[in-house]
Image (cartoon, rainbow over all chains, first blue to last red):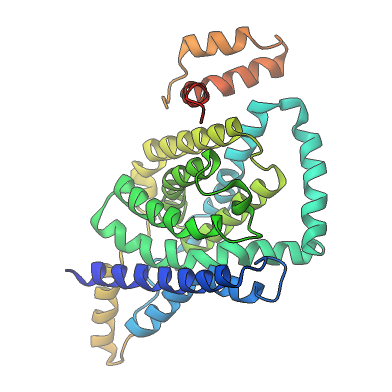
Amino acid sequence: MSTSSRELSRFLILAFAISWIIWAACLAVGLDVTGSSITWLFAIGASGPTIAAIILWCVIRRRMAGISTRWRRSWLWAPAAVALGAAPIALTALALAPGDVAVRLTDGVEPVVAESGGVLLFVVTYLVAGPLAEEFGWRGFAQPRLRERFGLIGTSVVLGAAWALWHVPLYLLPGTGQSAAGLFSLPALLFFASCVPLSAVFLVVSERLGGGVASAVLLHFVLNVGLSVLPLDSALASCLYLGYTTLIAVVLAVTVWRSPRYRAISTSSPTAIAAASRKSSRWSGTSTV
Amino acid sequence: MGLRLPPRAAIYFVSVSDGSFWGVVVGLLQAIVWPVYVVYYVLLGLGA
């Protein structure tokens, strides 16, 4: 087993162990995880991927592979992350009822912001819950290591499957948005399926457009805000969301992923970064961190 | 999910729209993901 595969296995075991063990404890307590004394515990569990990545980065003592330090070469990742995060839900809302989108937006924003306790808390909550809690792990640690072995499709399928599987306990915990739908429901199935094309979108924006984890955090933030403001309240809406996400992923794969122009600004693989770090430490006589 | 707009799907969705500009735009938006509607109605038929 190669170093990258070993690191990837360790990451997945650690991320799932942190999240699932803590969430199992929350499930055993039986309280609402979003509005009770165990909310902090639930939040730690939800941060499993990022905690696992930080632990492993400390253990490996290697430069944070996947976090692009060359984002300045491309400015495109920021607007792309916002546009691609908003596009699936916006297209879904337009295809369902174009006349209602403006009303749904204005009606949807106010309660979501009020529920968070104001604009600042809304931004902080939506930035931490999901984007910061997960992306250092999925897109920062796992994605570049998967990319060493697999292409766009393989990485998206494996990472999307892991990402979907990691979400399963959320469908069992009282108080989460997912628990209202239920684990064996059509929206749950469609959500799990959408993790694969979404992983492809994340991969293109974070790697090909050189956005790194910052772009993944922004993309995840916009996705979550979009789904909260314009929730998928019917089976057809969930189907359309999956359809548009898949379509966007295919378009990105055919255009941006294959383009030599964007290949040039891709993030380096962890092995390449490690090799470069070893080389530079040999010259400078210092250990790499 | 094809990258090209399937003409028959576009014709169908535009024909069932209200004929307004936005109605046609929405019809085209629906047409580019026409398999979604097929899967959805199949699932409905199966009682999912």
